[in-house]
Image (tube, rainbow, N blue to C red; front, side, top):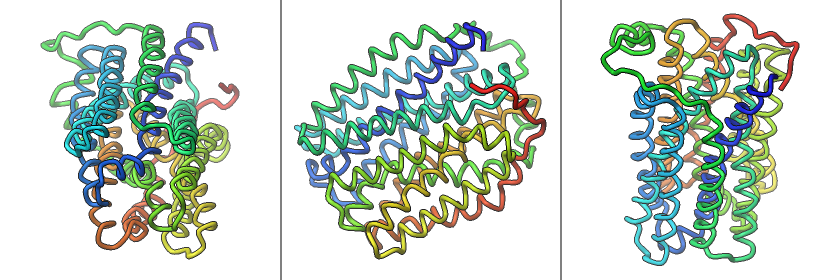
Amino acid sequence: MPPAQSRLYAAICGLFFLPGFAWATWVTRTPALRDALSASTEQMGMILFGFSCGSMSGILLSGKLTLRFGARRVIGVGLVILLAGLLVLAASIPLVNPWVAFAGLSLFGIGMGLTDVAINIEAADFEQKLGRPVMTALHGFFSLGTLVGAVLGMSMTALEVSVGGHFVAVAVLALLAMSWLITRLPPTPAVDPEAPSEAGGQGALWVVLRDKSLWVIGVVILAMALAEGSANDWLPLLMIDGHDFTATTGTLVYVGFTLGMTVGRFAGNRFVVRYGRAAVLRFSALSAALGLLLVIFSHLPWLAAVAVLCWGVGASLGFPLAITAAGESGNHSAMRVTLAATLGYVAFLVGPPSLGFIGEHWGLRLAMIPVLAMVVLAFFAAGSAKEKARHPAKASV
């Protein structure tokens, strides 16, 4: 890889890492946050819904803003808003105010939505120019961020470090890193909103929306993003409330999930080149289904904890591989990626909070049954992601 591409690749990796790191920071402290706010499972679902409201606003705006102002500006603004949300979330604890927590997660969600769609557009464009699959590895850095954030969160929990202090320290460190990384992305010229564009316009939109294959790919994205998002939102509480783990051990199980996600994504490119994207997606769906089945129905806590690894490995590849499939099909690539990413983040961000309402009445274990059903559906839809043209396999990142 030429030096200029290597520098850009490193910057994109770092910008995938930071949202994952910030995400795991607050996920690992959700038990402490719940206790500090004296919130029920249903109330936690409502607090998480603030994140969903914010994230959908960011997602719906991100594609248009990226086309208008370029990925670099949208990613930078999104990360600043995300980290501001983390600070507001920290402020909710001494105030003992669930509505402040709701506001903090709303800001966090807006920033996440803006950042994630823009960075996926940038990553898909980079992958196509490079001419070989790197999307799963790039998403691997998001998972690596969640792994590092989860290990740090587990350590902070074990050491009984205050949640507010933990959040503030992470926000400051992430802001410093972002300030350096964002300058490594190429500036994108502003687009004249009155000028005709291949990527925009109602005609292009209708062409994309009439593509049946994109909607079948969307089913895979919905299912696998829901499998990932439900674990990110609920896994520590699921292990604590559903399998009687302690707070520290429940967080350790979440670390296992992030480890499975990270390993799956970094190893994924090699398996895609060897076996093809559709076959790897089917394996991913089977692995996630097996993990969910054991977590839901096993009465052995240790078996449920081990099954989380299968859940993580299975959930790791669905989203990035489906994004690649959406973007490689010819015309209107940026619009296809935007729509596919939007479908994914609907499931990733909006679906999991709704599970809190089921969990309040039936328990968090049974609340995962809809997730299991969607993953099984993804297995049958995986053939839609078959490669249109195989990437050359001779080079590796």
